Image 1: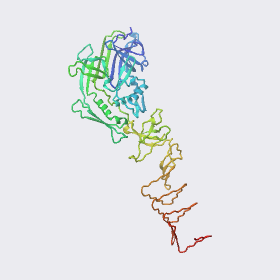
Image 2: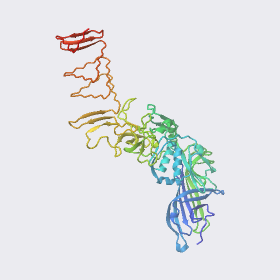
Image 3: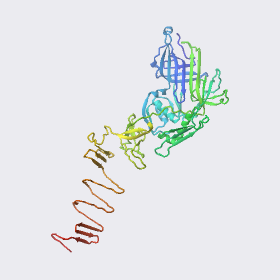
Image 4: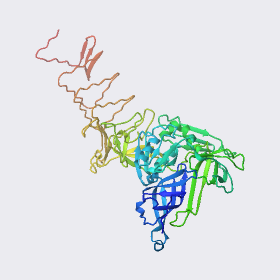
Amino acid sequence: MQQATQDENSIRIDTPLGKDALILTRFVYREALSHLFSIKAEVYSNGRDIKADALIGKEVTITLELGDKTQRYFHAVVADVTALGERVTKAAAEAEYRDYSLQLVASAWYMQHRVNSRIFRKKNVLKIVEQLAGEHGVKIDVASKIQGSYPDYDFKVQYEESDLDFIQRLLQHEGIFYYFEHSQSSHKLILADKASAYEPCSQEQVKYFSGSLAEPHIHLWQQALVMAPGKFVQRGFDLKKPTALPTGEVSKGSLVSGHAEYEVFNYDAEADIHPRANAIAGLRLEALQRDINRRKGASNCRSFSIGKTFTLTEHDDKAEAGKQYVLTEVVLTAAIASQTGANKVASQDISNTFYCVPKAVAYRPQLTIAKPVITGVQTATVTCRGGEEISVDELGRVTVKFHWDRSEVKDHESSCPIRVSQNWAGKNWGAFFFPRRDQEVLVEFLNGDPDQPVIIGAVYNSDHMPPYTLPADKTQSGIKTRSTKDGGAANFNELRFEDKKGEELFYLHAEKDFELQVEHNQTDVVANDRTTTVKGNDTETVNKDRKNTVDGSDTLKVGKKLLIDAGDAITIKTGAASISMKSDGSIDIKGVNITIKGSKVSIN
């Protein structure tokens, strides 16, 4: 049987197998703004045996003749090859003519097959998307159709989600839509954020005609008016301005009468929303209202593609004629019929169905991909800046290295500054203990949001053991610190409780200085003995009176000199005897019997 050629066909496919190794008989191309395209192609092997592994993962190009000696290309990657059976029996054809179904996808489709958990610091949405696309070899344009400015995220987490879901989630959050441009040898993902990014179709002026015409025309046109809320309110929480409650509120009347007052309220405490609450509210409302004035149609216009615009030049409804629309979703079907092995096409059918909205609409992606939720508590390791042992900012926040973070970053850039929960937190008062380098801490996430971690505690492990030997000292509890920087086991402050029956102890240790301040009264009661040892000097200042009462004996022993200095008088008294000295120099000695002894007594 003679082998066929696609040279004169209106549709053809080029594969790595060589020219006309596969003959394309039909394909369906599906595309929508902010979605990956897909192609289902029906082919047959042209007289040779085909191995599926020679096609899987390989690039192919479908060419569609537009009728004006120009071509439209569909470049894609083979994701699935299904053998459907013999087209003509090998015995009859003396060669392999087998039907196949090919599933063709965008190169970005493969991004769904890598699931990761990682952290991006100090990058904006465009940089993150560009980085991930580059890691997969996906051609992308993040600049030419972008007009808005996008601030760097302090901290953005991809958590147990595919690279594709992650970048699409970020793009949806920022209101950035995308589409693909095809050439004969490649396809490129284009990011856009304004209606000005749209470009006209090559068949820009199209008329409506319900019958059959050879020229490009629209033969089905359905108008839809869809209800949508008319107001969006976005509220957050800013820990640097906790009473401000940043709020964005945007209203835009719905086309449906009486629906303008419907409001969507959303609360999100994520840090990157605070300064952009109003802009975020506007993006959300545009996404909700994008389809309120939608059209559905069908045509034979071969150049119709998403992100392209056209003008409806004629319509039975005069109000529709002359309006401009942008295509948001297109399903193109192209098929030819011919005898196997023949070069002449018996018939062909090329048509599409589509959705479109007015050209002025910036077709914002809706929030269809939910952010992952981290349930429960995780542990992480505290990181610090440089050689520091404690790194905190003015709000007492620290950074950590999550155990699932496989990056090589191990310093303060490993995470965003994370707040540390304390058992009391007031305005310049409360309790505070800050985790230190390499400590294992417990991390919870506000509302399960990976971008909002909070440290709620710390735990011991085999590298960081408890301060007391266990289980031997299980009756002991307390607080033991470590001097920093470069303090050792012997350098600490400690408050310890021993609760063993009969050996109860309250222990307080100051590594260097100890200060006790009492604003009013202090009462100390010692039920038994007290021993005070001062290894240096002892200074005591009493601004008013002092009274000491000793029920037993009082012994004062001075190794060298004893000085008693009183401003007015000194009196020493026991029973009926007394010695009184006054500041004017007079001395009064009283007693029943006064005895003066000495080897030599001089009285002047």
